[in-house]
Image (cartoon, rainbow over the protein chains, first blue to last red):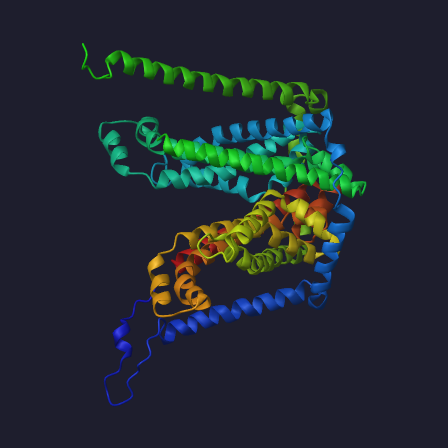
Length: 284
Length: 272
């Protein structure tokens, strides 16, 4: 970061020897403080713009604790311990599983197309694939769920499709980054022997990234499951619908129980995915 | 033959390979079974195919969304800025409340290992496992509608990711500067300020910028539950069945996220 020679700051003329070593010199410090100042000004202005009542913040946290302790506290566990809710949990798992699976199938291809170094056509296919993955990623999974519910009606299928779009965006980016970091020697060897783009991908690229892809796939499932717990909120099936219903009816104790079950399930899925990823990276 | 060592023969290798293949085959079969079962349960049994109708009907529903409502564009500017600001302040607040979580959650600096470490880890897990929409709902019920609830939701949601990655960075530091400062008599605070912080600060800032980029995306939906920003406009357009307006909002979100992505890319590059 610091390109100037640190020794140069010791001026040797006369007595005024600068004994103090500083990491940043004059023009750099100016830029640094300028950036810091503008960031600060921006934050102050946004607090003003958004009308945040700074003086009431502390009281708000007290109220938050109050709300949690009085209204949410004893979670109504009896409500979630029935067959119907368990079915919803299974539905959520299936939805996450299918969504991640379909998304991964697409994102392997998209990851290949949007990796700069092995993309079949850097001028046409690369930017198109890039825009597709970015579009899938920039639109939040809730918005995808709303759109698919509008088009297809209520049910699990819109949820699956929303999670598919989400997984395409999520895994596509990670896949392409992984492909961009491969050793190009093998790719060149296969190209030198006259392999076409598909052969280059299948024999040169894929074997190098297989382990990483498996890890990413497991991680995608984990993240998709986290998203799947709430896409039901807009009518896309699974546990989210229970959450929505109880929030709307201000059944806070039941809501607390549902939130608790979501946390427990997510922690389980996270532990499972961490265990599976460690196993995959060891089994290399 | 008494002193023959149990050498691995070709048969053994073939057998173990076959066993491995069988396990693999079984695993793939299991996955396939899961897929078939899930597809049957969700797509075939649960879907209301009459509601969806034919492919032409789907095409018709999709075609509602094609087009851009230009009359909406001037009124989009305010919510876009609001969304952007919610993401920025939310990330900053998340980073601030995250500092104790990083301190407690890194094994090598946590003050009381048996108490503070599990505490910080639990906070990170809860923060990450609750979706931002749910966080927003909790905060809306506590502090009322408006941007502030969105900021708190973003902050609560970013805590987990920032703290987890940063704590890992703190755990992976080079221990020699720390030892050097302790050797010349530095106390714990000095060790932290001069031994640990300079090593992890660029990494933590990189993580924060990455999270900021994700938070832009998140803050765009918080309006769905009444936390202001573009999500509110989206919701309104959706409820008034102004489908070209919906597309316009999505394009605005896309543009904002694109700006965030480019900015994050270059600022992270400048950091390293």
